[in-house]
Image 1 (tube, rainbow, N blue to C red):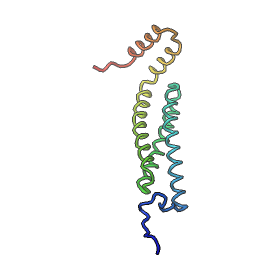
Image 2: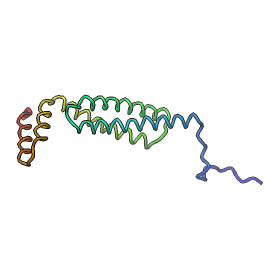
Image 3: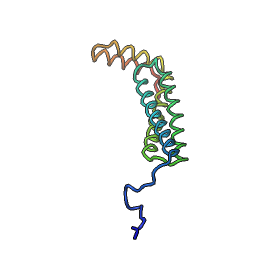
Length: 142
């Protein structure tokens, strides 16, 4: 007599993925990895120097495009919820990054002057003078 064919209960009896499904999953994971690298790259390049604002903006645009591609692949294929969560989190970070980039581009000269001043400041007093100088150079909204 044959045992009942109840494959839902045993953990090792999941249907193996076809080669096409494995290739699709691998492509989604590679896109997701590229997305994460672009997000992190954009954030860290922004931290370097205001003169690299263009590179940070380029990486942000690339990351947004990759994020949209990953979200579209998830909507069509429903592959991994972890990838979906990571992509949505990365898109939130990119939204903040876009605001930072726009603000930095708007006040480019002031931020550049502040960075140059703070690099040369050797004491806490000199650093606070740089910050005061930056605050005075920015427009006052009241």
